[in-house]
Amino acid sequence: MDLVKLKEFLTAQNLPDFRYRQIVKNYYSGRYISFDQMTDLSLDLRSKLNSQFSLYSVFEEKVVGDQSTKKVLLKLNDGQRIESVVMNYDDWITACVSSQVGCALNCQFCATGKMGFVRNLTPEEIIDQIIYWNQKIYPSFVSRIVFMGMGEPFLNWNNLLKALEIINSSTGLNIGARKISISTAGVADKIIEFARLNTQINLAISLHSANQKFRQTIMPIAKQFNLDDLKKACLYYVNKTNRQLFFEYALTDKNTSQFDAKLLANFIHSHHLFFVNLIPLNPVDGGLNSATKDQQKQFMIYLDQLGVIYSLRRSFGQQFFAACGQLAINK
Ligand code: SAH
Image (cartoon, rainbow, N blue to C red; front, side, top):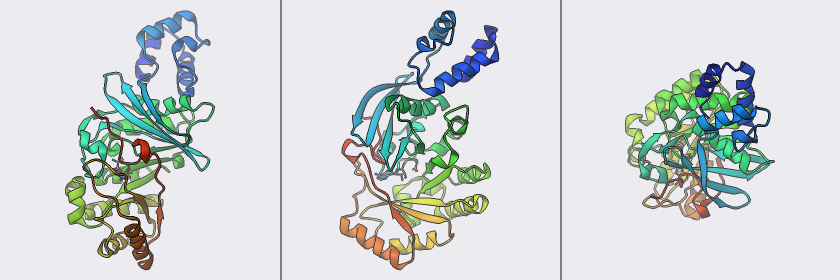
């Protein structure tokens, strides 16, 4: 719901400030499908709200998944569509949210990039993905958020910051900063700005190769911000925040040689707060090939020999294309 408009509307109706807080609280609680159910408001106000506002900005079209991972196709007010994922494992329920409709970055291995960029999501559209999941999985609720759905969050900067504030606020969704992670393909100037915010929100960088020549062939953004720029920004981030920084590295048949491991080791060893998250590549039409099991094992042996600390991320939802890099709208 657009809270700025709501406030204007209530002020115009001469309603006291606590009405606003009450409605906002109801909205964030996710317990109401429509204004009609807000029985703590007068009938008259409910019907006015109904005619002027839509409580949510995302509408379920299709859900797929199983007990641990679910993916939803959501329709927006202008007819655009996005996908959003929820994962339930290790006692945590994590929502993987989208920040844009499509994406401008066109990373070769990512399905969203193949759709092109359509538009930024509003703060409400970001928040409503989480509220949607809270309603869907009630009485459970989302306890972690990752910005790893469709889009590049750092290219929707202002709306991202507004959404983060609400997610984190005790009068909003009240999810601790340490339970929120943002992933960027490496928008270096925004990594620096993010560091300056001095929050406890986690950051992850989609690295995928420490070889500039190769990286720019699979991630066009690497031409704009090369590995040196990226490394500088990342060093600034860790020095400023003293927080760990995670580099995501999807294992393909083209970035898992001994030479690749050496370049990765060099990059990672430039700071003790740099860590590697290895991800099995999820297949995407027209994308890169996954590394074979043997290639994966061998790459980890190289990294061990070079003293690189890494973790191997499990992948969820591949069978219904809900895994990392697989979110896209098929027209
Ligand atoms: N634009 C942001 C967030 C979206 S991608 C970014 O690039 O980081 C979310 C995560 O999925 C990133 O870590 C990205 O590197 C990873 N990813 C993208 N395509 C993938 C694929 N085919 N297999 C595995 N991970 C992938």
